Image (cartoon, rainbow over all chains, first blue to last red; front, side, top):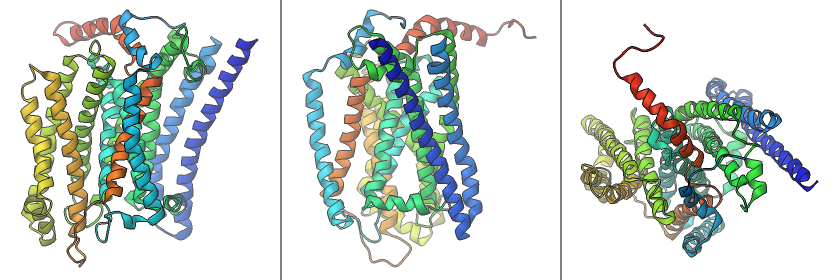
Length: 81
Length: 445
């Protein structure tokens, strides 16, 4: 019983930790999008913001994908096997 | 349960499971410096940047020097580790973890310097709300965030099997922490496949990010028209300097922990010899870039540039400039030219010299140009106060403390990669060498 509770706690913490990472990367992407919007709204060379964001955003998306892939492969699918 | 290794592995668990007096003494000494840094920061927070030596026009001093220096040192880890991994350099196995830890620890300290330099940290909110992507300062914020996240991931992924080993050790501590971080690792073939694929992707991703970070740090200077900053080679010059100082930082960390934790069985003179050779090559690269940078400026003979040029060669900053040349070129050449004997001592001397030299290099890039700007400011110079000295000492001590604390939680040498080297690596290397040699290859015409 105690072992089962511990396992449940471990799984919950792992999911929580993954959510924190998603929120972190999501927050950065939202921040970059906000800066594009601010540049467009102020007429402050939005093309520069868009250009740099086109490089920055995919990096964070790839990073998130790698972490989710590992989490899925080890903690979800790996545990099932 | 994960597989078990040889008896020498116990050395790697000892710092995690036992705490000696040396640890407490180290923490106590480091805490004194950190306390000095805290007092300095509180003073600065309360009274403002007026308590520092910063002035107009020298508005960047120790803090920005430290920022560039620490971000440079951060190249030790992820970049060197990624390059060694991708090139399948087998001697990397005991080194990569230490290198990756340096990156993660130091990049937080480096980014923190900007917060300190802002004076009031709430000014950071302006960057979040109204940052302009035309400014290289914001490119910095973005690329450093990417590097931080990528380095943390790149440190964490290869640690998973080791964390599982700690989780499964009988009588081990912190079971819950290790169980959460191990992500259910049991060492199945499928898990190995997933992890190796992810590490390979991260290795490829992290190299351009690392290069971009220091290029962007250099753009903060080179995108302005300040004398001796507006240079097209600043990007690669900074990257070379970063790798140079990063290797030196890694060597010092390796030697300190080798001595402190008795890791002679793992960190052999051959590792220091290879790293020493890399350091020597980077020293020559650094000299080439420095020579090109200064020769081009001298040949152009633009009056404002020449003021800064001569202040470095023969003026206020000459001591720092020639000190830099001594530390970054002369001493490394003298120490590293012959490494057959006393390898570790020579490599350590060269590395400490390079760390000092690279800090001086960052200083004489930042301060002399601001001391002689194009705008008609009266002649001025910069002298740090105890506040900047305290925050600098505190930052170095905080980095060392983070590093020491890391070693209390996780193995400083990758256990599973050493096992993999023994079980698979030797055979792989043999096959690889055979495939390089002349002869027929199966399946190819």
